[in-house]
Amino acid sequence: MGQKKRYHPLNILFDFWRLLKNAFFFVLFLFIINYDSSSAWINYGRIIFCLAVVLTVFSIIYKWFTQKYLLDDVSFHMYKGLFNKSERTIPYTKIHNIQRRQTFIHKLFGLASVVFETSMTDTDASIKFGVISQKELNELEARIHQSGSTNHDVVAYEAVPEAEKEEQVICNRTVHFRPTRKDTIKASFTSLSFLVLIPIIVSVSSEIEDIFDIEDKAKTFLMSNINSWWIISLFIVALVIMSVAFGVVRTFLRYGRYEIASDDKTIFISKGILEESTFTISKDKVQAVEVTQSLIKRMLGLAEVKLISAGSVGESEDETNSLYPFLPVQRAYEMLEEVLPDYEVTQKMYLLPGKSLWVRLLRPSWLWIIATIALFFFRPQVFDVKQAWWIISVFLFLIIYIHRILDFINTRYMLNGGFIQFKTGSLQTTMFVSKRKKVIEVEVSRSRLQKQLGLSTINMVNRSKPVHHTTIKDVPELMADAYRTWYIKRTEDIEIEKTSI
Image (cartoon, rainbow, N blue to C red; front, side, top):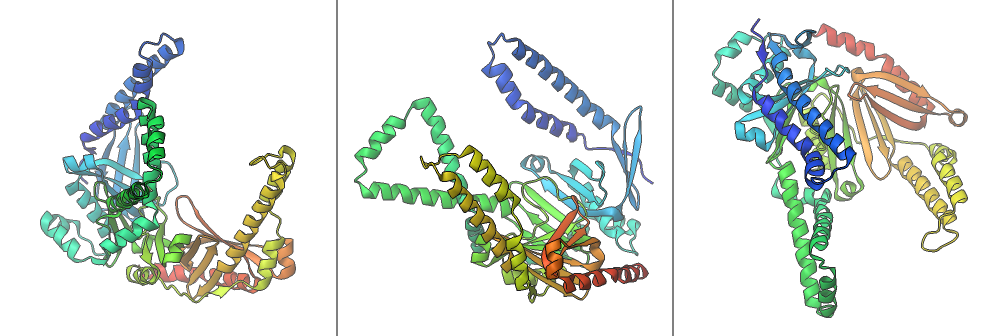
C-alpha cells in the first residue's frame, strides 16, 4: 500500500477563484453601489460578509491540509479531519461512471477535474478531484478499468511508459461518431440556439437606452425610413445572419470535437472546445437506455440516446450521459447496437387497445377542475373580455385532453426476451429499454375503472441517482400478468451472471 497524498495544491487557488466569483455581487452591492451608505443594515451586511470571507478562506486552507487520499490495487481510501478523523473506502468496482472536465482555467495549467460516481446514495458517494494532473488522472482511470478484469496486473501496467499506454488505449477504441459541419448546422437549428441572441440584443439595447436615452432617436429613424423597404429588408437579413452565425458558433463550442467511442468494456463520450468534458462508463454498468424525441426532432427525423447509470451524471446543464443529441433516428438505433451489442432494440411494438383511450378520456383532470374553480371565483378579464374565464377553462380542457390523446397514440410496449421496451409521451416521446436483470422493482396497480375494463398500470424502477421510475398506464391485464411472470425469471439471469465470474 502506498502513502497518503494531499490533493493538488492548486485546489486552494481554484477554491479562492470560486470564492471571488461567488462574492462578486456582494462586493458590488455592499461596497460599490452603497459605498457612501450609513444605513445600519448595510454596515451589518459588510461585517457579516467580511466574517464569512475570512471563515471561508480558513476552511479552504484547513480542508486542503486535513483531506488526503490513498490508492491501492483495489480501492480508494479517503481521509479527512484533524481531531475527529474519518475514513472512507470505496472499491474501484463500485465506480459506475467517470466524468472528466477541463475548463479554460484548467487548460492554462495543464490540469483537469474529475468525478468518480458510485451507486451509493449518501452525500459522500462521489469521489471528486477539483484539480488533478493529467498523468495522475490517466493512472486513476487505468486502475479502475483494470479492476473490471480478472487478469489485471498493476505492476505490469506501471512498467509501461506513459506515451505508449495512451497510444495503446486510443488504438483499442472504436470511434462510432464524429459530427460533420452539416450535423453542427442542423444541431444549431434543432436546438434553437440562434434564438438566444434575441434576448441578448433586447437586454443590451435596454441597457444602452438607460444610459443614452436612444428611444426617441430610434423612433425618429424608424419613421423616416419606414417607406425604405430595402433598409428594413437589409436590417432583417442582417439580424437573421447574425442569429444563425451565433447559433452555429454556440453549438460548435458546446458540441465541437464531439466523439463517441468504445472498447470491449467501456463507452467514452467526449465534447467541447473551450471547456472539454468526457463521460466514461463501463458497458455492464448501464442500467437502461432512453431514446428521446422532441416535436422538432420528430419532424426532422432526429433523436437523442441517453445512457442511464446507477451513478449521478452531475449538475451541469449539459447532460454528459447523452450520446449526440441530434442523431438521425436510424443512425441512433444502429449506434446503440454498436456501442451496446448486448442490448436488443426492436421498432416493432404493440399499441394500446381502444379501451385505453376511453379510460384516459374518462379519468378526471384535477388540474382542470381546480383551475376552473379558481377562474370562476376570480373571473379575470383578458383583453377586456368579461367572460374570459370560461374561454380559458375550455382552452385548458382542450390542451389537457389533446395531450392525453397524443399520449395514447404514441404509447407502445414490448417484451423482447430478456428486454423490455416502453414508449410514452405526447409532443415529446421517450422510448425506454432495459434488461430484466437491471430492473430492481416492479409494481402493477389497477384503479376501479381499470379493473372493469381489464387494464393495468406498470411502474418499473432502475438504479440511478435519483432512482429512475418508468410508468406506462392502461396496458392490457394480460400484458401486466406476462410482465410479472417475465420479471420473476430475473433470478435466473442473476444466477447466470454470478456463475460467469
